[in-house]
Length: 262
Picture 1: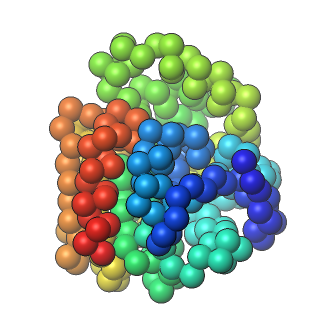
Picture 2: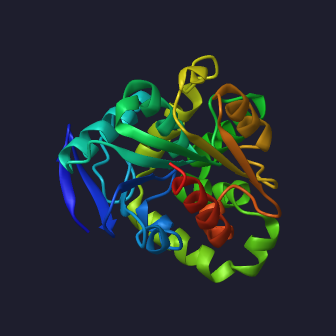
């Protein structure tokens, strides 16, 4: 996959399709390969670009403090480097936090905003979950961290039915992820709080959440929906946090229906 110089990074990315740009931003512990079930469908309609966030996947992993605002500035530099003056922006989980920050910092670069399984602040439930991840990382390294993420990100039914794919994903993530960088990104999530600011977002916005999400429960999505005027909220039943994997066709349908109107 190509890499491009952005700020102090070499950013790994994938691009497919033609037309108006759609930029995909993954979540904590993810990388662009996580979009495998949705990117081909999006690329039939849009120039679809997925990046690896700082500290993840094939992008540079500097050992320094990370922040959601810093990730937003990485995204700004990335879009400028690729000659993308404006795009639809879809962010998942931490990527949705980055999307909210970017919408406040650079609204002229977004035509519409899609926020999937995300949060505008870390409430007590989410703080306990993320602190649990930090404890597992300190106690058992990245493998233990991954195991805890799986419990939060997938429904029990999906975990029981897909031991092979999850084991393969664990092997790949151990090979590509840095425990230090993942710890830095986890701290960035804990410090994020735009709860009182996102009402200033004045862009067409779709919020998507899974009813069974135990990582970022739907009350966090509800807060975003009520805060961003005119936003739409789609709840998918029977699925958890990783909608792009557990409910890829439904997510694609919801997103494409929204984007075609904007």
